[in-house]
Length: 404
Image (cartoon, rainbow, N blue to C red; front, side, top):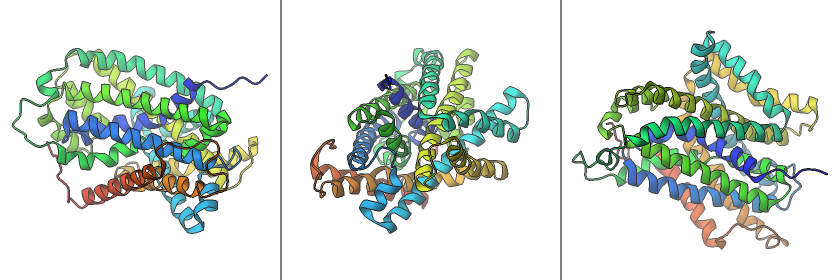
């Protein structure tokens, strides 16, 4: 008898897809908005992104379990929309893989004593094998990594949490009066931090049931939200807002954040635990994003689910970002700047349009449906358009920017 996959495993896959990008990007993106407005922005984003994932599930219910974004979007919204959507899905997925491969290479070169290029190649060969093998293998390693992250998080963040200064956490020590305007520039980063949508079809195929996939998605986004809250409380409660200047200057990268934290926390154990946590976050996201892109490309190129077919899918999923990482190690810093706007297309706008189209079909109101009716469809599209607009405005320096 076939064993049913657990909801914990699926939730961990979704959480691990979200957490890597979010943990590394949210503290510097939220430094202007600071604690209260950052929490509000992340909570609203989590609700919208969970519902938009459910909207994808609603559209997928009309198709067999092996389909993904490509087939459904092409069928429901036409070739032109599908081509645009495919470009944005692959762009964001590819850029994230590129970023994770480069970051892990830089962290591992010190650990295993080889050049960052060799470390990147070894990282891809070892950890992409889980994706090539099966979704169940990704489930297993995701549960281990989330547990590992929670343990290192507990040791690292509890060390920070014990020292949280309420004056620092709520910025009563500075004369700043306005935080809300900075939340606009934070929204695109918050949206990318819940960008698990290329894994929705993987979840549906894994469970063979939209309702179970729905709870795995909700569990995953809830775990991510809880970890983000704890992380921001711990960072913002220790590192004064005025100390974020050097971190923002270096593009918010995790090394700069750890260096800044090192100046306000004494314990080396805490610093090491947070470093370990960062590596686990990158690794879990690499595997989670890799699985989503893998299933998406298998559907796009119609590769079979055989060892040979999966090998072809592995090549088109992992080799291009690895080559980019070896040739242009820091190109992703520029490219990731565009990822937020591209992610709004496939994480908000397309899912809402697919749900609307699904409801015009003869069997549209049968089986699984996302909540909120047509008003929710409009709200999700509006959130996506607004976030993309803020992202473009931010790129052209048209929004208030916090520089520390």
